[in-house]
Length: 219
Image 1 (spheres, helix red, strand yellow):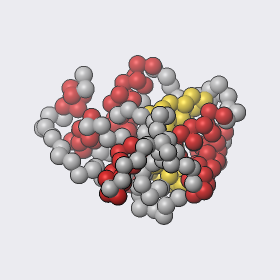
Image 2 (tube, helix red, strand yellow):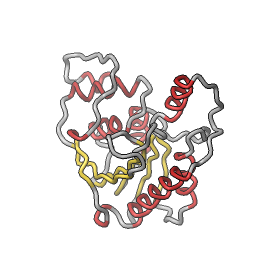
Image 3 (cartoon, one colour):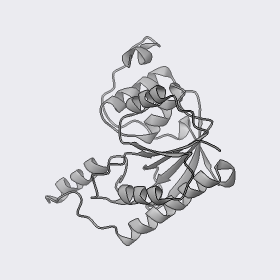
């Protein structure tokens, strides 16, 4: 039996303000899958996740990464991709490490950093939701920023699951279930490599010249 991991990137169980993440987690928890399926809440930075993988020494046959990510598609689009990796400059990797340690949760950064430290199995599938405001990756910060723009003060956790959100949750879970039970060979997957990743956010990055600086920075 294949060992399968499901990583919810940016999911916070104590936040229900934009309830796609928590509601989807309830669907996943209720699924009738084998004991070889493990669910991981990846609400930490990529470095901490890499260290957890290394410490647990668990070898997966297939790993799914579930998140909301902006790739310029129509809102409500669900896209399934297969991670194919690619060559990336060590300084570019260090930039993503720098961004990761600032607290930004990004599946793209996680893919690159995880690839560098060889934590991923051969079969990595991403299941991505395109939403108006990122609902899983930067769940809390997105909602708080909207409140500032509107000049409103609201309590995170009071927003109901709208009809559109419910439809999106159903679409996401359908693809997750297919990926768990049938795998990449049964899915219409879009290749996702280094060149297709989103650029880093507009923050100040510090670079050094030594090629081994990345390893030294996290020892």
